Length: 131
Image (tube, helix red, strand yellow):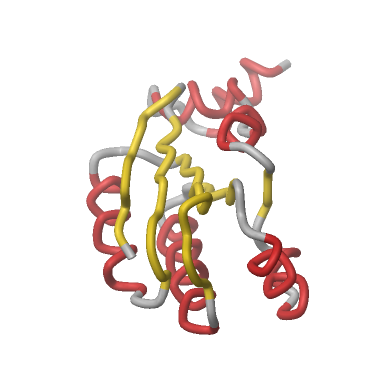
């Protein structure tokens, strides 16, 4: 597995993964670097994935936990039907938000929330901005 492409768009990082998603460390180390740079909103685009098995699910869960531990959010886009069924069988479809396209996933993040986080505003500032 490798991150084929990463694109920043509207304070969101869109990460296109390619290959078998099995080794969580190959995925979580670059995520930690991006989190250290201040990124908090991630779309994981799985269009080019070849295989998600139990280890792949573990890698996705590890990524989700890493991002959420840093007060970030992660969404999935363009997953295969096989991966969708696997997420349903394991109940992980209730954990991950899944979208048909990266743009849909990116737009599902509240723009006010993204801008507030990006500028370092706390929850009280976001609440006033949304009022």
